[in-house]
Amino acid sequence: MPRAIRLRCALALAALVALDASARAAQEGPTEEVPYVRTPQAVVDAMLRLAAPRPADFLVDLGSGDGRIVITAAQRYGTRGLGVDLDATLVAEARARAVAAGVAERVRFEKRDLFATDLAPATIVTMYLLPEYNLLLRPKLLAALRPGARIVSHDWDMGEWRPDARLTVAAPDKPVGIAKESTVYLWIVPARVSGRWRTEVPRDGRTVPVEIAFTQAFQDLGGEARIDGRAVAIERASVAGARVLFRFEDGGKGWRFDGRARGDRIVGQVSEDGGPPRPWRAFRVE
Ligand SMILES: C[S@@+](CC[C@H](N)C(=O)[O-])C[C@H]1O[C@@H](n2cnc3c(N)ncnc32)[C@H](O)[C@@H]1O
Image (cartoon, rainbow, N blue to C red; front, side, top):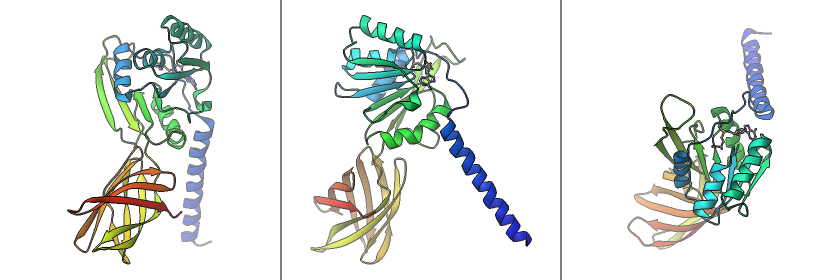
């Protein structure tokens, strides 16, 4: 076999092996256990300030320990919640603390693996785990949670998914680490809008068809629009929960879009530069 072909086969094989290893890691789960370390109350308070719970929210704490995050949310914000933990003694302690705090009607604690927990009902997910856990959970959180759901993590980030907010909090009673402070991160689950859409824009008193191809990396949006047969860049684009913002220019004119994505539609307003906002809709092509 010629050397160039041998090299290409070797590269393809290496890529397959790497793919297989990462798929196996995702399937087999984490390589380390998360020990029980409680979040200091000042940090719990900061996590909840970032998540801004309301009574209509449903908060899930993945690895809930003594239940302090779920219980504090129920006490201060009237939020319903679920805590899951592998440790049966901690689950029993959390249940007892919920009764003592007078919130047993609003919260539940279950002995369960966090990776086997249904996240779909959650509008807020909190966690104090390990970096590897956050990365393993990331695709599951993005797939299961609805746009606008909030994720708050104590101390560990989500890799290349940039947080939407972050705080450093003094934590003098933190049981681990030398620096007695914690970092708290917030992410808002973005609507999934990558792919092709068709829409129309007003131009010189007529309506012009436009095809848009969005590329998306978490909350960052880019891509191009095809208008009158010309491709133009999508600019200043972002997804914040269900809200989709972008603009593009063609032939010296610019259009600004502000809509909310819901399934295969985005509904909102478009403004031609200097003009009043008008109702606007886009429909997913594929
Ligand atoms: C660092 S503690 C955080 C406890 C609590 N959330 C807090 O912030 O105070 C992590 C918790 O996750 C639990 N845990 C670890 N792996 C788990 C898993 N696979 N499923 C459910 N709970 C798990 C541990 O038992 C421990 O109580």
